[in-house]
Length: 133
Length: 133
DNA sequence: AATCTATATTCTTTAATCGGAATATACAGA
DNA sequence: TCTGTATATTCCGATTAAAGAATATAGATT
Image (cartoon, protein in one colour):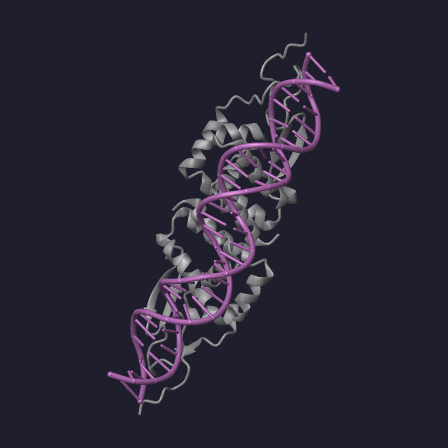
C-alpha cells in the first residue's frame, strides 16, 4: 500500500477517532456511535472508507458488524508503523483520551441478542434476557 | 498541534516528497523543482501549505528561500513521532528512494550567487564565477 | 410473511482541495 | 534605476471530499 493512501485515511478527525478505538480491540458499529456521539451514517461511511482501503476488516455477527484492525501479521510495514505511531500520539491528545475513557467504562452491551449466546469478539453481550415467550 | 492537522499535511503525495527530502537537510526551492520535476507554482504552494501549519520553516538567503524542518527541540511529540515514522517508511517506497537518490547526486548549485559567499545551509554553492567587472 | 433492528448505500448539496496561468514581490547585478 | 532571477500570490476551473436525508439491505423475531 502506498504511504500517501495511509495518510489519506488518517487525515480526517472522525476516522482517527475510529482507529483510536480500534487500537483497543474489535468493536461493533453501535459502540462507535455511542462513544463518538456522531450519527450512524457518518460512522458507517467512514468505516466503509477505511474498509475499502484495507485499514480495517469487518465481519458480521448476527445483526452487528464487528470491525477490527487487520492482524499484525497482515499489516504492511508502513501500516504497522503508522498504527503504532497513532497509538502513541493519540494517548497525548484530549479527544482520543476521552474516547478511550468513554469506551472503557461503557456498557459492552450492543442490544438484544439471544440469551446465552457467547459474547462476541467485540465484547457484545445481551442487553437483557429477551423475552422468549 | 492537533494530530489530524499533521496527517492533513502528510496526505498529499507532493508534500510527502517534499518532506522526505527535507528529512535529509535544509534545501531551497530550486532543489525541489529539480528533484520532483514539478512546476514551480506547485512546489511553492505546497511549501506554503506546510509552512503555515508549522511543519517547515523558511529563511531567505539572497534570492533563494531555504526550507527546513523545525529543529528537533521545537517539534511537538506528535510531529517528532510522525517525522520519524515517515523517515522509516519512505525508505521502503520507490518514489521516495528515487527522490533521495536524485538529491544525493545532484549538483548542489542553485544558480549564480556572488563568488566567495559562504555556502548556505541548503548546500547552495555558486554556479560559476560571476563576472565582477 | 411481517416486522424490527443494525448497518449500508444512494442522492444531493456544500465545502475543501488541487493544479495551472498570469501576475506580483523581493532581491541582485549592471 | 532598470533588468533578470527566484519565489510567492491571486484568480479560476475542475475534481474530490464530507455531511445529511432518505432509502435499502441483511439478519432476527414473532
